[in-house]
Image 1 (cartoon, one colour):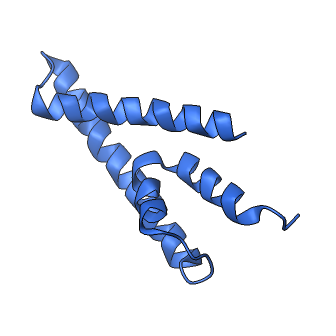
Image 2 (tube, one colour):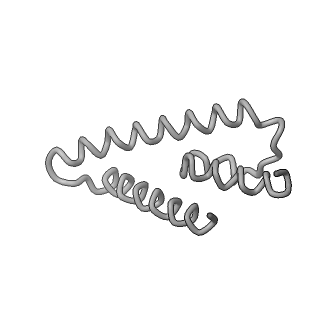
Length: 91
């Protein structure tokens, strides 16, 4: 499971790389506009995930600063990694 989460995080990292590359060096035509919209959508959705998770479990789970920010970057895959880290031995 760890390998799959790591692979998914790498894929999301690649998506962010493409999206930020589009901001620095816009792609030609309509593709740039579509990627701007996808960047805003992905940022809003992952930001919402981060705010909801920290609001609901921030006082119950002692997370590092990186774990909190990783939710913004990797979304559900960061949450799965955090869950796996803190649920070991609780089954």
